[in-house]
Amino acid sequence: MGNRAGWLGRLASRLNRIEAGLAARRAVVEAEAEAEAEGGSGAGAGTAGEGRAPAAASGPPTPAPGTSTEHPALPPHPPLPPAQPARPDPASVIPWGMRVAAEASWRLLLLAGMLWVLMKVISEVRLVVLAFAAAMLVTALLQPFVVRLRRLGLPRGLATAVTAVLGFVIIGLVGWFVVWQVMENLDDLSARVRDGINELKLWALASPFHVTEKQINDIAKNLSETIGTNTEQITSAGLQGVTVLVEVLTGMLLAMFSTLFLLYDGARIWGWALGLVPAGARRGVAGAGPRAWRTLTAYVRGTVLVALIDAIFIGLGIYFLNVPMAVPLAVFIFLFAFIPLVGAVVSGALAVVVALVTQGPVSALLVLAVVLAVQQIEGHVLQPFILGRAVRVHPLAVVLVVAAGGMIAGIGGAVVAVPLVAVTNTVVGYLKAYSRDQLLHGAAPIGPGPHGATAVGQAAREAGSDQRA
Image 1: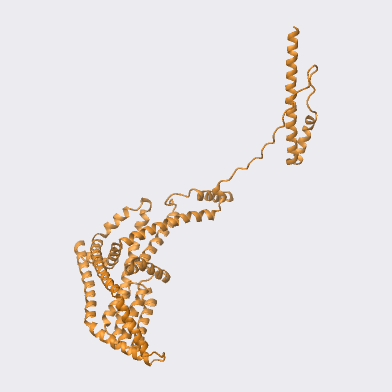
Image 2: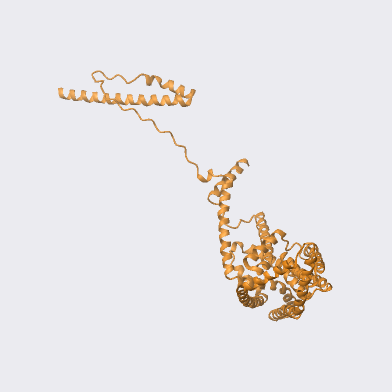
């Protein structure tokens, strides 16, 4: 019995020590909580602290009689780390304008890369591309005649053959006539050029610029030496000219075959190309195609008419001023008129130079006046009246695209550049109007919705608009 009573006393003493330790630990925690509440909560925290002050100040409870008050010291409770605020989504921190600019930038970079690759491909197959572009222009010119012959009752094949043969015969006759006139007047032109050079020499000697005969002879000698030292380059240029002639003939054959098939089977070719377009955008592209073709047809027919008027009136002015090769010069003016702005300047300058070396400065000034007068009438009367608003392109855009087309593909690129921009302008304008009309009628927009960082900003704006509503 004595052993059992001693064992129970020791157990009770140990339980009392554990209870005292827990009470002391609870008092320490309550004191720390009260201190934090008083520092951060103000009056409300102070009131709560007063309610807990007696418990904190009372200290550990008195142990039961007969138990030992000795217990091991508990280590202090380490302070809790401050709570870290939640980090926001990075997309929501970046401003909306910067997100839109970033997404637009990588899309522009992708488009620039695609255009660069496209230009590389075009430069490698430039002959085929230019031949097909020329076929498109000739088809736009001849296709109305096929339609008229079909209305008269001719079958499609016969109407296409008649139109193509007549068109190619007329083009060939014009080329033969130009070559024939040049060869017929070449001897006379050479003699007049020599006489004109002598007249210019005499005029320079008698001019107030104090030019001496020795200076003129030195210039002629330097020109002769330059030609003699560059004989190899001139020969290689001649060989290169032969290569260019072969390429031109090949391109002409490709253009002729392409024109035949476009005149005969253009609708079926357009249907096949339309099948390559995604189904969601096919309806809009199907509406843009005929409008683009009408724009191209209006451009080609209007340009031909304007070029014909320029060639007739400038040719008549040159003829009445007794400038040699008036008819070939008129044909050159007609052909160069297909290069907007630049072609008129080049053909006019050619006529002025021929008049200068054959008739003298007075005739050259008169030819210059005729060229400027006709070109002013063309720019302010003929083009707005004939071409109208169907193919209106800003003059700055014309200059830039002609320069870019010439740098990429030479003269052919300069000829094709303006109709390409006119057609692109028509297609883009129609597609924008079509998309706006679809949205007004409640149709879903084509393509996926915004995603990623852009979607975050758009969702925030929509939420703000809902709250304001």
